[in-house]
Image: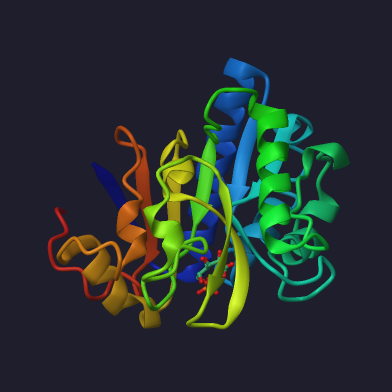
Length: 245
Ligand code: 6PG
């Protein structure tokens, strides 16, 4: 079961997502004394990051109990503008009172498989022996239907373990480090943040089309029980036909 929320613009979409995250953060800290979030990469979350670092949210008490991971990372230097943690650091994290030791970046100075194993160890250091269940797992979608670094027709799609894997993506000729689908699906709340008319056709296929996860890996993300959200702007939702009003 999924919830689709459509916002007028990229700005209101980003504001609505910031509100969602802050509400989950407050309840997570109140219930369990911490808030764990896995951030997505790419460009869509950039405005969200700026809003979370703005006066409206930057002084919230929950940041001190917040733990940050990334659902995937490009296999580039941590100071590369292509690096997801570099972007989040510059737009948001440097302005927030999150303890430095609570921000877990992928160590891309290690070989890909070791970087993935090291990141999985970091997950275990936070979540212990249980399957890591992030309070919020933020995701984007590519125009080819990928999410995180779960690209079409790659081996990582067949992973049944909730873990972190390195994957060489032939389509973009790049190594990536990514959560597997089972790890994402273990999250308490999963939120796809999607904007722009260029995403409308693929989104219609993902949400309303045939189930074909090798072709559309975002379809692997099911969530557990009513905890799957699609936060879209009107442009990204333009091709959706079966919206219950
Ligand atoms: C990444 C992301 C990836 C991203 C989509 C959408 O590392 O690139 O995690 O899954 O969310 O490619 O990217 P845009 O937001 O730039 O369209």
